[in-house]
Length: 161
Ligand SMILES: [Zn+2]
Ligand SMILES: [Zn+2]
Ligand SMILES: [Zn+2]
Image 1 (cartoon, rainbow, N blue to C red):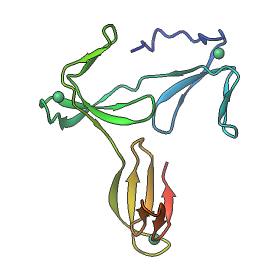
Image 2 (image 1 turned 45 degrees about the horizontal axis):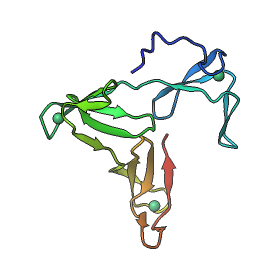
Image 3 (image 1 turned 135 degrees about the horizontal axis):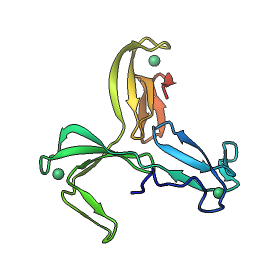
Image 4 (image 1 turned 180 degrees about the horizontal axis):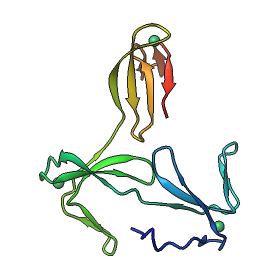
């Protein structure tokens, strides 16, 4: 893990100063080279492609590891995936092995019933939280048919973040 405090503010690729620290939608922090920028139309980085990601500190959860009983940590990866892992697990960058308990649980999307009516059809809404922490409200009558690859029912969707 890099020490954030000791980071100098110059791009290691081109020597230009780094831009402002920005926070992504999922709460991760990154800093882009000031000569580079993200073009949302072409979905490509222009100029210097250097991006520095800050590690999100794992958060201790009020949950116990099912394998060893130690507290679990909530970790957000570079790729915005969330996982729970055992707090006794340590990664040794020298030997490239991990030690301690190897319990890992990847978080998938969760749904929760809401006490709100769908503005389109009057049925109840559901709150869906994706593995990367994005949330949307959708109609509880909406179902995904994996065989036909179509969604059925009411198509009301409201993104929250
Ligand atoms: Zn640069
Ligand atoms: Zn454990
Ligand atoms: Zn509906």
